[in-house]
Image 1 (cartoon, rainbow, N blue to C red):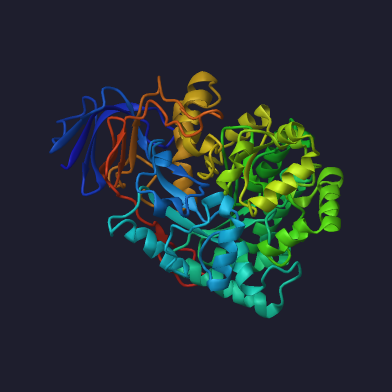
Image 2: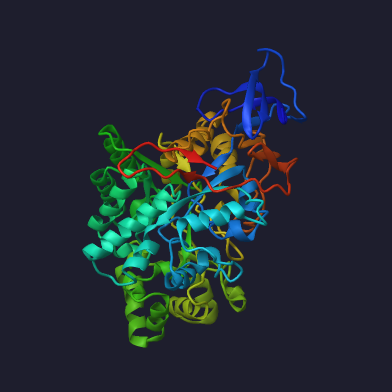
Amino acid sequence: MDLVIRDAQVVDGSGGDRYRADVGIDGGRIAAIVPEGAGARPAGRRVVEADGLALAPGFIDMHAHSDLALLRDPDHSAKVAQGVTLEVIGQDGLSYAPVDDRTLAEVRTAITGWNGDGSDIDFDWRTVGGYLDRLDHGFDGQGIAVNAAYLIPQGTVRMLAVGWSDRDATPDEVERMRRLVAEGLEQGAVGLSSGLTYTPGMYASDAELTELCRVVAAYGGYYCPHHRSYGAGALQAYEEMVALAREAGCALHLAHATMNFGVNKGRAPELLALLDRALAEGADITLDTYPYLPGSTTLAAMLPSWTAEGGPEAVLEKLRDEPTAERIRHVMEVEGADGCHGVPIEWDTIEISGVADPALAPYVGRTVARSARERGEAPWVTARRLLLEDRLGTTILQHVGHEDNVRAIMRHPVHTGGSDGLLQGAKPHPRAYGTFPHYLGRYVRELGVLSLEECVAHLTARPAARLRLPDRGLVREGYRADLVLFDPDTVAAGSTFEAPRTLPTGIPHVLIDGRLVIEDGRRTDVLAGRSVRRQPVAAASSSTSTSR
């Protein structure tokens, strides 16, 4: 065989007890699993001595923002070193396909804080299929660092069909959006995402979203909404998404399913009861979370949605206008903007994590409130200056989470792991570099919130099932050899809020397609990642298959 991993503690992703075995790999797939004492040990041209390390399926990041990082960074150790072998991108309703020249320029500006402005990227695609082809080609035809699946971004689709107007789509516009979604699914996307606190996606009515989800359901995909509120009205927002998906007959995956802000402290059981009722009635629901308290987004995302009518340049014009800027301040600080989930903003919870303009670097690592005090001005004055001078490119950490809610949600049987990690900025959220080892180190070993076997299932088999991948997510003969070897006694996230780009410890080996991408704790030059696509199927068919 190409490679044999000897004497591993196999944690196979099923949730069952670990067992000791040798695992043989050939042609990029698991060719043999020989439990200890069960027969002749397999022979390989290369041997990795596990010495009792845990061997698990590669981790699947169900909520990633590596849409451009995969094309600019062949190393991509932020994810590879965590044992991530597949990322799901195209999240929160905003990404780079499908587009035309106008919408490409608009979306690049709108999510500069997520992915950079893209000035280092050759945007030589306009369709979903073209983007996936670009991922396959990667670097000089060798591929990319990890595998990637893509969600069609509903906000970008609305940009194409409707623009940035806060109004109902016409029947013709809805039909165009339906066609765009169908084309993207036929070209290999696995579903549809929304960012319903981000413009212009948030302007869509439930009826419009339901029509798009009917298309997704017909192709066997799933709907992944960042719903309308994670603060005031969070439970109602979850109920809305459950009802919408059930009306459309569509599978539902709730993105970064948190219960944040003071109004939701201790209310995770109410969310879980809502999900349990829907599941008992036959709904197909999963969710993902990150194992940290603060959230992360852009400073511009905190603004009221009406500011974004007309696109990013219109936002800047409104901020420059004194009466309009004062109206924005009042909504944010007194009423609670929809961009801040209906909760009046608390500037001492808003920490600047990154800026597009290097001249603004002194703001990084400080809250808006602290910077304002140091400058002797009101927090809104500081925030407004940042938004204007950084042209909406500022990223933030928002310190609004609750530990009891985080633990309760991660225990749920339909839970999966997602980093929601932004890789931009001088001080990104540590979840970008630490989500998966943090689950294993803190929440398994230190706190015992999950057993090792349960946690691995949450990070591997369950997301693979949601993605309808028939040969990933388990250590099984015939499955793809996307695997991670880690030490349960030492695995830990190295990243912290003070040093967020520190790599994890206790993960010495990672394989993608049977090839070592991390060996003895070091990144190799192997680029084994490709797009993971749903094969085109006729509408109204529920059967799906996948290929690399």
